[in-house]
Every structure is written in structure tokens, then in C-alpha cells.
Image (cartoon, rainbow, N blue to C red; front, side, top):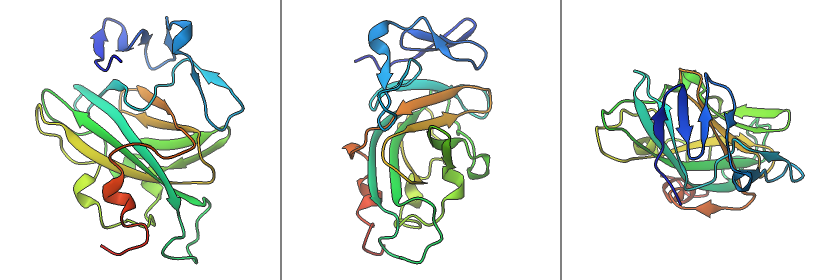
Length: 200
């Protein structure tokens, strides 16, 4: 599986497609089209899968490699049944960030990480009641990444159903879109999920 993403004139190249001016990916091979879990078999040629790397731009406009490594669904009300939440699941999303120059990819108030399924959408920045909230500060996705060092991050979203898409945007109009499985997949979420029912 190819993980490396490279800059190309006129856009950001993700595998076999080129994003032009913040638009959709094109020039994708037919086999690269992804099924979107939970959306009746709908397809989206821009979707990437867990384990694939995309290149976004950090806040200074420099390349930042982002790789989704794992997701996990947990009961959003595991510790508090009275929370005023719209979604039944706390979705933990683990990913790595790496940059040759160092940098960061947005701040919490930017709400640059979102979950979507059809017309439904929720933002990571608006969710502060995950069962593990306050236990995974060392994995914040808003940290400054050191040059040439892989940084492991975890974000969380309150979602109503399993599946859908994860959207990660930068300040330059680029969006990494991921197809999310309907079951726990991959690695990296353990630092969060171990606190689903226990206190940190």
C-alpha cells in the first residue's frame, strides 16, 4: 500500500489523484473508489482508507503528512447518563502527523475535524464530554509537531451512528476525507478507550 503523498504543480497529490484548488480529486483509477459504510453502498472517489497517508498544509502552509491509524466506538453515556448529547457514540479517532519542518494543524476553535453522514454533521471542536475527556491531553491533535518526528494524536466526536466519513481540513482549502468502518478498526485509540468506564 502506498503511503507517501507528494506535492504536484496545481494541487496536492493523494495517491493517484490531484486536488485542484480545493476541489474534488480526479484522475483516480476505478479500483480506488471507496464504499462509504452506512450510506447504502454510495461511492466517493475522494475517500481514503485507514492506514493511507494524505498531505495537508500546516498553519504556515508547509506539507504535513496525516495518517489515520484507527477508530473506536464507545458508549457516549458510559460515565454520565444525563449528558445533553445528540449522538449515542463517542468516536475515538487516532492518527499520526509528521512534517519535515515541524508545525501544527489548526487549533480547537478552528473545528477543522468533522464527521459527516448524508446531511448529518458534527464537529470535534464542539465535543467536550467524551468519557476520556481530560485523560488524553498528551495526544491532543492541536500540538506542535517536531520536525521529522511522528506525533500520535487522538480526537473524538459525538456521532449518532457508526460509519460515515471523517473530514480533516487545513486553512488552505484542502480536505482529507476518510471512509469510516462501522466497527472498531486499526490501532492508536487505546489511550482513550481504556478510560471509557474508569477514571484517569
